[in-house]
Length: 81
Picture 1: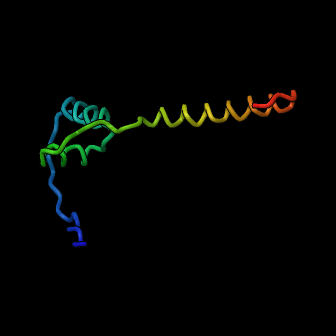
Picture 2: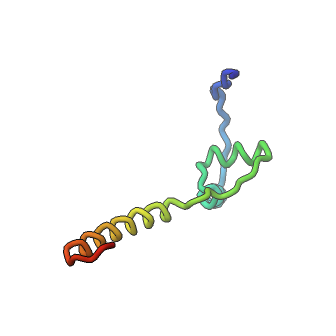
């Protein structure tokens, strides 16, 4: 496997505050950091949103805890769940 080229060069760009807010909002909407968003736009790559938003994983985890609690209640009452 070829070794990846390290990112050692930087550029500085001036933005108006409103432009930077818009850029950050666009990056956040697809779950990317500002620098990854800019890099992908420049390379013409797709900017598809992340598959599962982080809030969904939190909800999934909480529902699992509720299910465990309900199962424990059912076991205490002699129910088979």
